[in-house]
Length: 211
Ligand code: BEZ
Image 1 (tube, helix red, strand yellow):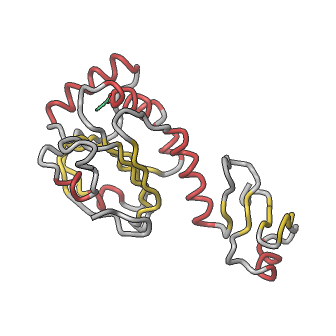
Image 2: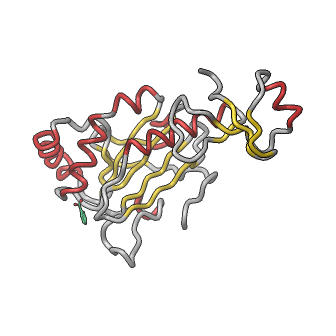
């Protein structure tokens, strides 16, 4: 069944390149990113894993654990990791789930049979510390994902989880934000005592809180 925003992220136990992992236990109180790859030893996947390994400290800074998946077995992941390090210059520094029986891929609806009935699409699930799904992305096999965009969305998710604001189009850290629609002007006066720019009654712009 499709996984929707706000659903609990399905739990599973799986073999990974860093040993057997129970997903919820492994996440602990952290945020998480679970992302799938169609196959080992494929070019776009190779660049994606190498890139994510290179920006792992950016996920760490945000308290986000990263875990990859492909339907190939563990030995294949280990052999492929050597190619990734050789060609991308970064050693894979997060666990990769080996899912040859497609248990996790099916649980997360990562196989879209009308696209390909044996390989996963490029799925991304961002999971919050309470294990709820905060973001889903689905890319085709032929298009590598933009992991800087993923970091940007995580910044927005983490900001909006702790402040009653929303982030506008193309928002990045430090840019102005929008007071949440459910916040009355009375409440907004308490939350934003320095006021706001009311471009419309429903479009109230304030500096990013907490900076
Ligand atoms: C790739 O990673 O390059 C790839 C994988 C499956 C289908 C197409 C491309």
